[in-house]
Every structure is written in C-alpha cells, then in structure tokens.
Image (tube, rainbow, N blue to C red; front, top):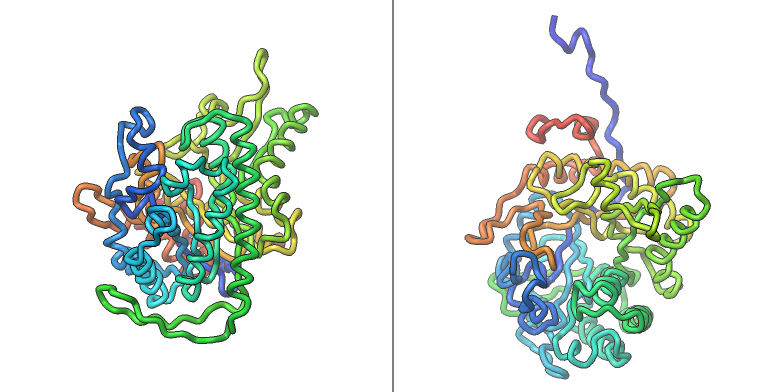
Length: 460
C-alpha cells in the first residue's frame, strides 16, 4: 500500500505575512563594488595581519560594473526591495571635491533599481570613511559630524527622488567596539576615550542628519510622479519614481539577543540586562524621536557565563563546549533569538515599525543556508503574530562579498561569485527564498527544512 495512504501527509495553509511586506536583500559599497581606493578601509587592508590570509578587497565582486546583471538576478528571485550604501569616498574623494562622474554612476545604479520596481533603502555610511576624514581624526573629531551632515545634504539633493528609506549609519556600536576598543578595525585603537567620543559623535550625526533629511524632503509634494533619465548609463534607462508620501529615516542597528548562562543567578541576570541595554538600547535611547523605523541587523546570541578568576565570557567558547551548530565563521545558529529580540524592541518602542535590515549566514553548505532562511523567517512570523510591527526582511547578502577582516572566505550570498571569473551563479537556497517572497509567506512544504535536512530540490 502506498505510503500516502497509510500515513497521510499533514498539510496546513501557508504562514502568510502582512500585505505589502517587503522581501529584499542587502549589500554595502566597499564589500561588493571594488576599487574603493580613497577610504580608510583601503588603507587599513595594506597593514600586515589586518585581513585574514593577507587578502585585500581589490575588485571584490566588481558590482560597480555588474550592478544591472545583479539587479536582474534579484528581480528573478521575486525580490521587491534592495538595501545598498553610497560610498562617501567615491563621491568626495578629496575634501570639498565632489566627483560628478561618481554622482552619475550612483544615479544610474538607483535608476536601475527603480526601473525594475524595487523599493530602495539607502545607507549613507556603512563603516567606511573617506581617507581625508580619517586623517583628520575620523569619528573622534567633532568636525566629522559637520562633514557627514554636509555629505548627507549632497546625497539628498542628488539622489533623494530615488530613495524610499534612508539609513544614516550602519551598526554604530560595532564601529565603536571593533575600531576603538578591540583595535581590529580602522583606526585600530584601544581607547576608552576614543570609543566614548566616537559614540557621542555618531549619535550627534544621526540626529542631525535625521532632521536634515526631513527638512529637505518634507517640503516636497510626496505624491508627485517623476520621470528621471539615467545619465550616461548603458541603457539610458528611464525610471518612473513615486516618492513616498512620508520620509522614512532610521538606523541599522546590530541587535544581540542576550541571556545569562545561569538564569537563576541574580548577578548573572543583572549583567545580562546591562549588556542588553548597552548593546541594544543605548544608541536608540540616546537618539529618541529620530527613528521613523528601527533597522535590525541580527546575527548574534550571547549567553554570558562567569568563571572563577574571570569576570564574564560570552557565547563563543560556550558554543564550542556544547558543539552547537554554527556558520562557517563560528556564529551560532539560534533562530529563536531573533523573535526574542523583536519582542523586546517592540515592548520598548511600540509605535516604531521594524525592518530586518540584515540577517544571513556564511556557509558553503547550501542546505544549511536554506534551513537558516526558513527557520529565521518562521520566527519573524511568530513575532508578527505576537503583535510586533515588522514590515520587511533583507537577507544579507545578495551576492558574496568581502567580509571585512575575514576577507573573501565567508560566503553569505544568495548568489555565488567566482572571484576569478566574476561569474554569477544563483544558489539553490536563493530559490527557496524566492518561493517565500512569491508566496509572501512560508508554504508548509518549506518547514520540512527545519531539523530534517531536506534538500531544496525536493521542494523546488
């Protein structure tokens, strides 16, 4: 007797997401464009030992010249939104010296996105600074706030009509921690004073630019329909742009789910709460009333553990002891952490909508990537059902990229890059994500990926 008759397959309806939920992917300029020769990271990469295996970003994925093809592939994956960043150092390679050729380039990039019907989320600063800004002290220098505000004004005036969402800065606490406390990123310092000054200046920069963008764009008639001709593009594309009725400005914040290893220890629990506040709430609290949305970059879960003779240690060693499943770069796969983080944020900031601005996995095992995507999106679904106002999800990343100090080894992309030939190949996990985007939800068949090791081809 056939198996289907003896054991009927249990089915239920697709787990539907809200109408107009945005399904997208994200990249950042320095990680994918190639040849960003005028920023602080380009100089940092020259230092021996700064990047794994001595790698340098070089031409990276050469997205600078392949963006139209990459956007076509994103469109084929049923995506309707795209997050990217401007490279400040391309636009202003020298102080007060704007590069009109690069302005036209980014206008063509944004026009290509709008011509394909994408909602655009544009990040003004994704870690990198022009080298001339870095030489003047970077974010430790209060003048950088003024420079950043001037750059933001230039960006709004040149690219405003194309943009649906503005992200001022990406992961400010990561920039502070790795650049000024651990010394692993530019400028490579270990200075509490430098970290404090940088944090304050980043909060000032976000607040000023938030008000600036609203001041410049709120005056316009948001219902206007504009046709914009790509300037100098290969296709001379014409974009039909419908600026959003409301200007949306926020920040992309690295959110960490935090818990105590010994949950009944008062000391451990208090330290976990302090860690949660510093990582997840301090920047938002310091910049209250300047967030039209909260951008959540979610990768990490921390369980804090005390040891004799030490203060606290966090998750990494604990994971190794327990042999938990991780990505290729040792980041724990912990789907329920994202729903916990979303519920926490929603409780603290109930009137602010949330977008998952980054979430992804570095792996060469594409079945693992498929299970990751399904399991994390399922947790987001549950958070929405619990009342969290999540309005979009951007997988990190659309294509393989230069992963900062880890170099090219981590493979985050929905689309694989052969760095020798620059050939693009859509991974099977991307087809899984495309099915979710098409359905605007999780079909029951896809839930088999969670914990059962079902290959994507069995569904697709």
